[in-house]
Length: 347
Image (cartoon, rainbow, N blue to C red; front, top):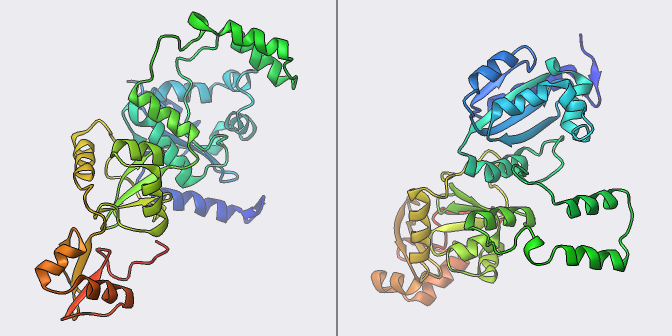
């Protein structure tokens, strides 16, 4: 029987569920959150960490989260007392589980990851799949954090819509000075700086190679600039003009394809370190030149600069520039600033 739920029919809801499963190569799928609960807990009892998705099969809305202990997190979601607790019931996903019942939800384990990679990857999936039930645009975790009593009072007053008087502001400021400050005599680790950058940044930065393969995701343009010894203005210029940065990489503020997955996830890996070294090593390259056969369109040469192309091919660099500008060949050569011919400027 065909019936409507909101603006979608039952069949449309069902199709969306199957399309999501088919499009992505998820690690695990549990069709019925309630009926599969024992297997879910059993298969994740050894503190498996990763990214998960709770899918509402009634209205096709879903939630994306991460956890260092998936089994523990799922136990909470399956506990109605936990969901209806005054401290938890303001979360949209908790309300949805109570309203629609657990047997109308499916659980997807998107991917298993080390704890240190959860925040960046959760942010990636939230941006990629735009889940309805997520309040925050970025991955977030408050694990291990406890408010000081002064902070609790501040939050309580703020939640009631009251405004602090100047006297109150002075008292709060004084109470958090010196050793009373939670961050007194401490410095942020590099990883902490990156996590802070995620929450402050309004965008992630995607680094593609010259073949348009996603290599790695950075939490902000500033973080990328500091990592590769560059500056925001330079990177922004390459981003805006769709230019190949240092002869090998494109800097993007959105995915070229919505299902692109980064080749590098772990920023402590040797692969990531070698990539950064290579980017820094190529800092002398302003604009690479790619040469193709005019008849077959096959790639022939890559030069780290137009003067090197001039010297090797014995063609004046002014002529090379004009051939790129006018899209005309010279001596059976096609010159381009990109490895891929006819690359769209709106890539």
